[in-house]
Length: 379
Image (cartoon, rainbow, N blue to C red):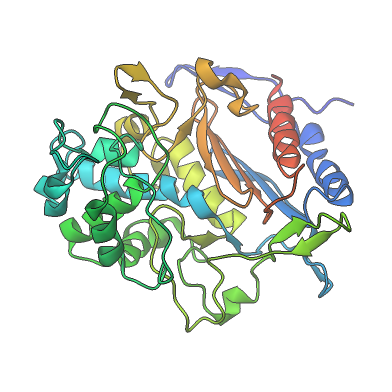
Protein backbone atom coordinates (compact mmCIF):
# COMPACT_ATOMS: atom_id res chain seq x y z
CA UNK A 1 0.00 0.00 0.00
CA UNK A 2 1.34 3.42 -0.89
CA UNK A 3 1.08 6.12 1.74
CA UNK A 4 1.83 8.98 -0.59
CA UNK A 5 -0.52 11.83 0.16
CA UNK A 6 -1.40 14.07 -2.73
CA UNK A 7 0.07 17.48 -3.27
CA UNK A 8 -1.91 20.64 -3.75
CA UNK A 9 -1.28 24.23 -4.70
CA UNK A 10 -1.61 26.83 -1.98
CA UNK A 11 -3.04 29.72 -3.94
CA UNK A 12 -2.46 32.42 -1.33
CA UNK A 13 1.21 31.63 -0.96
CA UNK A 14 1.79 30.46 -4.54
CA UNK A 15 3.88 27.59 -3.19
CA UNK A 16 3.64 23.85 -3.24
CA UNK A 17 2.22 22.35 -0.04
CA UNK A 18 2.68 18.64 0.51
CA UNK A 19 2.88 15.92 3.09
CA UNK A 20 5.85 13.59 3.44
CA UNK A 21 5.36 9.90 2.73
CA UNK A 22 5.34 8.18 6.16
CA UNK A 23 6.19 4.85 4.58
CA UNK A 24 9.47 6.27 3.29
CA UNK A 25 10.19 8.13 6.53
CA UNK A 26 9.76 4.76 8.24
CA UNK A 27 12.85 3.54 6.40
CA UNK A 28 15.10 6.05 8.16
CA UNK A 29 15.37 4.15 11.44
CA UNK A 30 16.40 0.81 9.87
CA UNK A 31 18.86 2.63 7.60
CA UNK A 32 20.48 4.31 10.60
CA UNK A 33 20.58 1.00 12.47
CA UNK A 34 22.42 -0.48 9.50
CA UNK A 35 24.90 2.40 9.67
CA UNK A 36 25.51 1.70 13.36
CA UNK A 37 25.99 -2.00 12.60
CA UNK A 38 28.50 -0.98 9.92
CA UNK A 39 30.45 1.10 12.48
CA UNK A 40 29.72 4.35 10.67
CA UNK A 41 28.57 5.77 14.01
CA UNK A 42 27.99 4.57 17.56
CA UNK A 43 24.58 6.19 17.74
CA UNK A 44 22.44 8.55 15.68
CA UNK A 45 19.48 10.84 16.28
CA UNK A 46 17.42 11.98 13.29
CA UNK A 47 14.56 14.45 13.12
CA UNK A 48 12.38 15.83 10.32
CA UNK A 49 9.94 18.73 10.62
CA UNK A 50 7.36 19.89 8.10
CA UNK A 51 5.67 23.26 8.50
CA UNK A 52 6.78 23.42 12.14
CA UNK A 53 5.54 19.94 13.07
CA UNK A 54 7.66 16.86 13.85
CA UNK A 55 7.00 14.12 11.29
CA UNK A 56 9.95 11.90 12.20
CA UNK A 57 12.15 11.64 15.30
CA UNK A 58 14.21 8.57 16.12
CA UNK A 59 17.30 7.50 18.05
CA UNK A 60 19.34 4.38 17.30
CA UNK A 61 22.54 2.86 18.60
CA UNK A 62 24.50 3.83 21.68
CA UNK A 63 25.35 7.12 23.37
CA UNK A 64 28.03 5.32 25.38
CA UNK A 65 29.15 1.94 24.08
CA UNK A 66 31.34 0.90 27.02
CA UNK A 67 28.76 2.09 29.53
CA UNK A 68 25.94 0.26 27.75
CA UNK A 69 23.95 3.49 27.46
CA UNK A 70 21.50 3.56 24.57
CA UNK A 71 21.11 6.64 22.42
CA UNK A 72 17.97 8.61 23.27
CA UNK A 73 15.99 11.25 21.42
CA UNK A 74 16.94 13.86 24.03
CA UNK A 75 20.69 13.12 23.90
CA UNK A 76 22.87 16.24 23.99
CA UNK A 77 25.48 16.80 21.27
CA UNK A 78 28.26 19.28 20.66
CA UNK A 79 26.92 20.83 17.46
CA UNK A 80 30.16 22.68 16.64
CA UNK A 81 29.87 24.82 13.49
CA UNK A 82 26.11 24.46 13.35
CA UNK A 83 26.46 27.29 15.88
CA UNK A 84 27.38 29.61 12.98
CA UNK A 85 23.81 29.60 11.65
CA UNK A 86 22.48 30.58 15.06
CA UNK A 87 25.12 33.30 15.21
CA UNK A 88 24.13 34.57 11.77
CA UNK A 89 20.49 34.63 12.83
CA UNK A 90 21.27 36.60 15.98
CA UNK A 91 23.20 39.23 14.01
CA UNK A 92 20.46 39.39 11.40
CA UNK A 93 18.04 40.21 14.21
CA UNK A 94 20.15 43.25 15.06
CA UNK A 95 20.21 44.25 11.39
CA UNK A 96 16.42 44.15 11.26
CA UNK A 97 16.22 46.23 14.43
CA UNK A 98 18.41 48.90 12.81
CA UNK A 99 21.19 48.49 15.36
CA UNK A 100 23.80 47.40 12.79
CA UNK A 101 24.02 47.17 9.01
CA UNK A 102 25.53 44.54 6.79
CA UNK A 103 27.57 46.70 4.45
CA UNK A 104 28.89 49.68 6.41
CA UNK A 105 32.38 49.37 7.93
CA UNK A 106 31.88 47.15 10.98
CA UNK A 107 34.51 49.21 12.84
CA UNK A 108 31.59 51.57 13.49
CA UNK A 109 30.49 49.10 16.18
CA UNK A 110 33.74 47.21 16.86
CA UNK A 111 36.57 49.79 16.71
CA UNK A 112 39.30 47.14 16.75
CA UNK A 113 38.42 46.30 13.17
CA UNK A 114 39.82 49.66 12.08
CA UNK A 115 43.27 48.60 13.24
CA UNK A 116 43.67 45.37 11.26
CA UNK A 117 46.66 45.11 8.91
CA UNK A 118 47.78 43.07 5.95
CA UNK A 119 50.80 40.72 6.13
CA UNK A 120 53.10 43.46 4.88
CA UNK A 121 51.89 45.83 7.58
CA UNK A 122 49.79 47.93 5.23
CA UNK A 123 46.21 49.02 5.86
CA UNK A 124 43.62 47.05 3.82
CA UNK A 125 42.07 49.00 0.97
CA UNK A 126 38.56 47.80 1.83
CA UNK A 127 36.87 48.10 5.21
CA UNK A 128 35.59 44.91 6.79
CA UNK A 129 31.79 44.67 6.98
CA UNK A 130 29.46 42.49 8.99
CA UNK A 131 28.49 40.69 5.79
CA UNK A 132 32.14 39.78 5.26
CA UNK A 133 32.57 38.58 8.85
CA UNK A 134 29.56 36.28 8.67
CA UNK A 135 30.44 34.89 5.22
CA UNK A 136 34.16 34.19 5.80
CA UNK A 137 35.20 36.82 3.26
CA UNK A 138 36.75 39.33 5.69
CA UNK A 139 40.25 37.80 5.60
CA UNK A 140 40.24 36.91 9.31
CA UNK A 141 42.86 34.15 9.47
CA UNK A 142 43.02 31.01 11.58
CA UNK A 143 45.07 31.97 14.66
CA UNK A 144 48.01 29.93 15.92
CA UNK A 145 46.93 27.49 18.62
CA UNK A 146 47.82 28.51 22.18
CA UNK A 147 47.81 26.67 25.48
CA UNK A 148 45.13 28.96 26.88
CA UNK A 149 42.74 28.57 23.96
CA UNK A 150 39.27 28.31 25.40
CA UNK A 151 40.29 29.83 28.72
CA UNK A 152 40.31 33.48 27.66
CA UNK A 153 37.19 35.60 27.23
CA UNK A 154 35.49 36.21 23.89
CA UNK A 155 36.77 39.80 24.04
CA UNK A 156 40.37 38.67 24.59
CA UNK A 157 40.16 36.07 21.86
CA UNK A 158 38.78 38.51 19.32
CA UNK A 159 41.50 41.00 20.24
CA UNK A 160 44.01 38.28 19.31
CA UNK A 161 42.24 37.57 16.05
CA UNK A 162 42.32 41.22 15.06
CA UNK A 163 45.98 41.59 16.01
CA UNK A 164 46.94 38.89 13.49
CA UNK A 165 47.56 39.89 9.83
CA UNK A 166 44.64 39.41 7.45
CA UNK A 167 44.89 36.43 5.11
CA UNK A 168 43.68 38.49 2.14
CA UNK A 169 42.15 41.82 1.19
CA UNK A 170 38.63 41.99 2.71
CA UNK A 171 35.96 40.94 0.25
CA UNK A 172 38.40 39.57 -2.30
CA UNK A 173 38.30 35.88 -1.37
CA UNK A 174 36.73 33.22 0.84
CA UNK A 175 38.44 31.30 3.62
CA UNK A 176 36.47 29.41 6.25
CA UNK A 177 37.60 30.79 9.57
CA UNK A 178 36.82 32.99 12.54
CA UNK A 179 35.00 35.96 11.06
CA UNK A 180 31.78 34.77 12.77
CA UNK A 181 33.59 34.82 16.13
CA UNK A 182 34.44 38.47 15.59
CA UNK A 183 30.80 39.12 14.63
CA UNK A 184 29.73 37.52 17.91
CA UNK A 185 31.89 39.94 19.86
CA UNK A 186 30.38 42.80 17.85
CA UNK A 187 26.96 41.61 19.04
CA UNK A 188 28.11 41.91 22.66
CA UNK A 189 29.35 45.46 22.12
CA UNK A 190 26.16 46.58 20.37
CA UNK A 191 23.71 44.99 22.81
CA UNK A 192 25.71 45.49 26.00
CA UNK A 193 24.92 41.90 26.93
CA UNK A 194 27.11 38.81 27.19
CA UNK A 195 26.79 36.82 23.98
CA UNK A 196 25.24 33.76 25.62
CA UNK A 197 22.69 35.89 27.49
CA UNK A 198 21.47 37.51 24.27
CA UNK A 199 21.04 34.12 22.59
CA UNK A 200 19.15 32.73 25.56
CA UNK A 201 16.80 35.70 25.90
CA UNK A 202 16.18 36.44 22.22
CA UNK A 203 16.40 33.02 20.55
CA UNK A 204 16.46 30.01 22.83
CA UNK A 205 13.70 30.98 25.27
CA UNK A 206 11.26 32.27 22.61
CA UNK A 207 11.75 29.09 20.56
CA UNK A 208 11.59 26.74 23.56
CA UNK A 209 15.18 25.55 23.02
CA UNK A 210 15.64 24.47 26.63
CA UNK A 211 18.72 22.28 26.09
CA UNK A 212 20.82 24.60 23.92
CA UNK A 213 23.74 26.25 25.70
CA UNK A 214 27.49 26.74 25.74
CA UNK A 215 27.98 25.31 29.22
CA UNK A 216 25.77 22.26 29.93
CA UNK A 217 24.92 21.75 33.59
CA UNK A 218 25.40 18.41 35.33
CA UNK A 219 21.97 17.09 34.34
CA UNK A 220 22.58 17.82 30.66
CA UNK A 221 26.19 16.64 30.79
CA UNK A 222 24.81 13.24 31.80
CA UNK A 223 22.93 13.20 28.48
CA UNK A 224 25.92 14.12 26.28
CA UNK A 225 26.67 11.48 23.65
CA UNK A 226 30.23 10.19 23.66
CA UNK A 227 32.52 11.10 20.77
CA UNK A 228 33.95 8.20 18.75
CA UNK A 229 36.70 7.51 16.25
CA UNK A 230 37.53 4.32 14.35
CA UNK A 231 40.59 2.67 15.87
CA UNK A 232 43.19 2.10 13.15
CA UNK A 233 44.26 -1.30 14.44
CA UNK A 234 41.13 -2.90 15.89
CA UNK A 235 38.73 -1.30 13.38
CA UNK A 236 36.35 -0.79 16.29
CA UNK A 237 34.79 2.48 17.41
CA UNK A 238 36.75 3.96 20.31
CA UNK A 239 36.08 6.96 22.55
CA UNK A 240 37.78 10.07 21.23
CA UNK A 241 38.67 13.53 22.49
CA UNK A 242 36.11 16.33 22.42
CA UNK A 243 37.77 19.74 23.01
CA UNK A 244 34.52 21.35 24.16
CA UNK A 245 33.46 18.68 26.68
CA UNK A 246 35.24 19.95 29.79
CA UNK A 247 36.18 17.91 32.84
CA UNK A 248 33.22 19.21 34.85
CA UNK A 249 30.38 21.71 34.65
CA UNK A 250 32.47 24.07 36.77
CA UNK A 251 35.15 24.23 34.05
CA UNK A 252 33.80 26.54 31.38
CA UNK A 253 35.32 27.13 27.97
CA UNK A 254 35.18 30.49 26.26
CA UNK A 255 31.86 31.21 24.60
CA UNK A 256 32.55 30.49 20.89
CA UNK A 257 30.05 32.02 18.42
CA UNK A 258 31.58 29.99 15.59
CA UNK A 259 31.21 26.57 17.18
CA UNK A 260 30.65 26.26 20.92
CA UNK A 261 27.02 25.25 21.40
CA UNK A 262 25.59 21.99 22.73
CA UNK A 263 22.03 21.08 21.75
CA UNK A 264 19.50 18.35 21.02
CA UNK A 265 17.63 17.29 17.90
CA UNK A 266 14.38 18.72 19.27
CA UNK A 267 15.91 22.13 19.96
CA UNK A 268 17.71 22.38 16.64
CA UNK A 269 14.60 21.16 14.87
CA UNK A 270 12.69 24.11 16.31
CA UNK A 271 15.39 26.53 15.22
CA UNK A 272 15.48 25.19 11.66
CA UNK A 273 11.69 24.97 11.52
CA UNK A 274 11.52 28.66 12.40
CA UNK A 275 13.82 29.43 9.48
CA UNK A 276 11.92 27.05 7.18
CA UNK A 277 8.71 28.88 8.10
CA UNK A 278 10.16 32.21 7.02
CA UNK A 279 11.32 33.37 10.45
CA UNK A 280 8.32 32.45 12.59
CA UNK A 281 7.34 29.46 14.73
CA UNK A 282 4.28 28.91 16.91
CA UNK A 283 3.22 32.53 16.53
CA UNK A 284 6.62 33.92 17.59
CA UNK A 285 8.45 35.86 14.90
CA UNK A 286 12.23 35.90 15.13
CA UNK A 287 13.06 37.31 11.68
CA UNK A 288 11.14 38.63 8.71
CA UNK A 289 10.93 36.51 5.57
CA UNK A 290 13.16 39.10 3.93
CA UNK A 291 15.73 38.65 6.70
CA UNK A 292 15.72 34.87 6.29
CA UNK A 293 16.23 35.27 2.55
CA UNK A 294 19.07 37.76 3.09
CA UNK A 295 21.08 35.58 5.44
CA UNK A 296 20.61 32.37 3.43
CA UNK A 297 21.54 33.82 0.04
CA UNK A 298 25.10 33.02 -1.16
CA UNK A 299 27.42 36.02 -1.29
CA UNK A 300 30.19 36.92 -3.73
CA UNK A 301 33.88 37.43 -3.14
CA UNK A 302 36.29 39.02 -5.56
CA UNK A 303 33.45 39.40 -8.04
CA UNK A 304 32.73 35.67 -8.04
CA UNK A 305 29.79 33.87 -6.40
CA UNK A 306 30.58 31.51 -3.53
CA UNK A 307 28.35 28.96 -1.82
CA UNK A 308 28.13 30.53 1.63
CA UNK A 309 25.63 33.01 3.04
CA UNK A 310 25.61 34.77 6.41
CA UNK A 311 26.33 31.77 8.61
CA UNK A 312 24.76 29.27 6.22
CA UNK A 313 26.17 26.76 3.73
CA UNK A 314 24.13 26.98 0.54
CA UNK A 315 23.49 24.28 -2.05
CA UNK A 316 23.79 25.92 -5.48
CA UNK A 317 24.32 24.75 -9.04
CA UNK A 318 28.05 25.07 -8.37
CA UNK A 319 27.94 22.49 -5.55
CA UNK A 320 24.73 20.61 -6.27
CA UNK A 321 26.06 17.48 -4.55
CA UNK A 322 26.42 19.27 -1.20
CA UNK A 323 23.06 17.93 -0.07
CA UNK A 324 20.50 15.48 -1.45
CA UNK A 325 17.86 18.02 -0.49
CA UNK A 326 18.83 19.86 -3.65
CA UNK A 327 19.76 23.21 -5.12
CA UNK A 328 18.28 26.16 -3.24
CA UNK A 329 18.38 24.43 0.16
CA UNK A 330 20.77 25.44 2.93
CA UNK A 331 22.03 24.55 6.39
CA UNK A 332 25.28 23.81 8.18
CA UNK A 333 27.36 20.91 9.37
CA UNK A 334 29.49 20.50 12.47
CA UNK A 335 33.00 19.16 13.04
CA UNK A 336 31.84 15.87 14.56
CA UNK A 337 29.33 15.00 11.83
CA UNK A 338 26.25 16.88 13.01
CA UNK A 339 24.09 18.54 10.38
CA UNK A 340 20.97 20.66 10.02
CA UNK A 341 19.37 21.47 6.69
CA UNK A 342 16.41 23.51 5.45
CA UNK A 343 14.21 23.37 2.36
CA UNK A 344 12.57 26.80 2.49
CA UNK A 345 10.26 26.15 -0.47
CA UNK A 346 8.74 23.04 1.10
CA UNK A 347 9.13 24.22 4.73
CA UNK A 348 11.10 21.11 5.62
CA UNK A 349 13.78 21.04 8.31
CA UNK A 350 16.09 18.09 8.97
CA UNK A 351 18.47 17.39 11.85
CA UNK A 352 21.12 14.67 11.87
CA UNK A 353 23.18 14.22 15.05
CA UNK A 354 26.21 12.01 15.65
CA UNK A 355 29.52 12.48 17.46
CA UNK A 356 32.09 11.17 15.00
CA UNK A 357 35.69 12.17 14.47
CA UNK A 358 38.08 10.22 12.24
CA UNK A 359 35.37 7.77 11.18
CA UNK A 360 36.12 7.15 7.46
CA UNK A 361 32.54 6.30 6.47
CA UNK A 362 30.98 8.69 8.96
CA UNK A 363 29.40 10.90 6.31
CA UNK A 364 27.37 8.15 4.67
CA UNK A 365 24.48 7.92 7.16
CA UNK A 366 23.67 11.62 6.76
CA UNK A 367 23.54 11.24 2.99
CA UNK A 368 21.21 8.23 3.32
CA UNK A 369 19.02 10.12 5.77
CA UNK A 370 18.65 13.16 3.53
CA UNK A 371 18.03 11.02 0.44
CA UNK A 372 15.18 9.27 2.24
CA UNK A 373 13.69 12.62 3.24
CA UNK A 374 13.75 13.67 -0.41
CA UNK A 375 12.30 10.32 -1.47
CA UNK A 376 9.46 10.93 0.99
CA UNK A 377 8.72 14.16 -0.88
CA UNK A 378 8.54 12.25 -4.12
CA UNK A 379 11.69 13.73 -5.64
